[in-house]
Image (cartoon, rainbow, N blue to C red; front, side):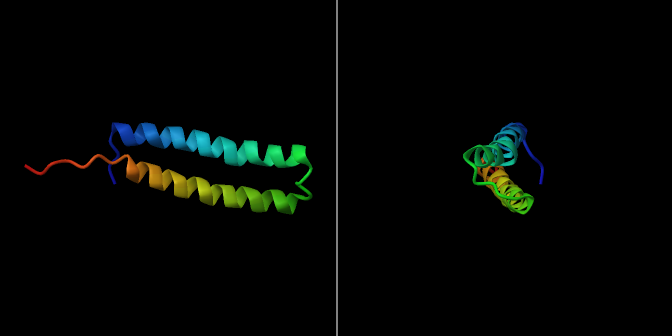
Length: 71
């Protein structure tokens, strides 16, 4: 699938936002609140964050597609 300029911009923004929050922000927040008990919990949360990040990226990139008129 070829990505246009807008889709590339959306892809970068979503990967930074979701990736940053899911991979750094959420585990850090859980650790600060004392809800992160073991490394196993951390790995489960990071795996779930990876799936969520990939799904959101897919939805946003597909949603940023601008249909073209066939002439």
